[in-house]
Image (tube, rainbow, N blue to C red; front, side):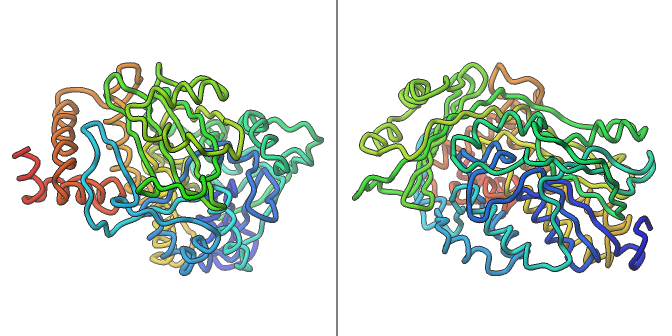
Length: 470
């Protein structure tokens, strides 16, 4: 036990990062830890607003079926709270028109949907719920600067105040300009003295820019094994007011890439306030150019004119914002992490955002942490070991699917290769071809992509027969 008070295995947990993954992890630990400390570099806004510490927030976000099921299990009633705040359920067929590499997906009476809203609405609803738990405390405007412990066990964190550096953006443009500064950890205001917080469990939820690898090296730990895939994706997004009387015949449109040479994609999603968010993206070599001119040029170059026509009479509700997420990374903490440490969300596995998996995988990880803490009755070593295994397992299928698709593009670095991957590509091509006209195949494909079923569902006899016939 590291804490100076409390019951062994039920002392203090520290969560590094108070974004969505960190908030969900803190909530998952309630009842298992006597004290849960969330260390957040920013200061939270008093209402849903963009903030500098979430640089991807201004781009399209959705919570897949598996994600909002997990969130509802963690926080009963949260889905109703989100829809009250303007989040829109979008059925994966009927409400969504999806142009895959093989053509438009067949329509059918879908049983699954994703939730669509801006990121501040999602984060704020979760934050409101987490703040109701008395055992969770927040250190806002504070950054973790290192870990306590040794190569065998992490026993806490070192933190310091960031002064006024990590605040929220009053003007939407301010938050976007601050993205680079937040990612680099730059401050600009006087920083406080470093102090220590002992802990029985440290949860890294610091996102893509996590510094845990460097901190572990300082403790003498061997490097954590990782996989990397880099498709060089870049984003350009803008909010639009929905035109009065606009009728797309659907709620959302997704124009997918078509490997190996059509590396552009675009998505239109409904969000709160009677608006659309339109996110355009391109793999390496097909990235959107900056600004309004780049946005318009990329829109014109999509495989189908649907988005361009939908926006013809739509008034912009924001500036064009760009984002380069960097490589996808999957860290295998289950192999050699020291006791007392686990990672969740983007700190554990980052994905190419074009597949919409990141939020859902983070929520599945939080649910795995909840189940582990309940099973072992606390936050001791057994909880951490099981949680690390299950968090890694939750990312396995999404990682395989995203990495295999990224590998289709010739400019991608890393990722799977070889005869087996080529066979997988050929099989998926046949699945997509069948999904343009066979509702059963389409439904099965949607279940897999919504992360409610493993890819093996596509080998169910009735599905496989249709695929092979096609």
